Length: 58
Image (tube, helix red, strand yellow):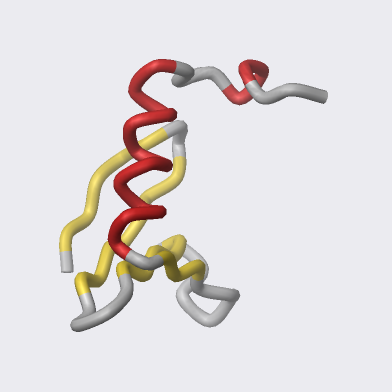
């Protein structure tokens, strides 16, 4: 599991056999998001190009 500071949220990332799961380490009892590896890669690639929360279409 790796941690990093991103947008003032401390995330844990778990690389599982078929999924990649992320959660807020400050509130670990709350929901975990998990993605197939290709979808997680697409998410990270999108965030690199559009790092602002305001970049998503409304």
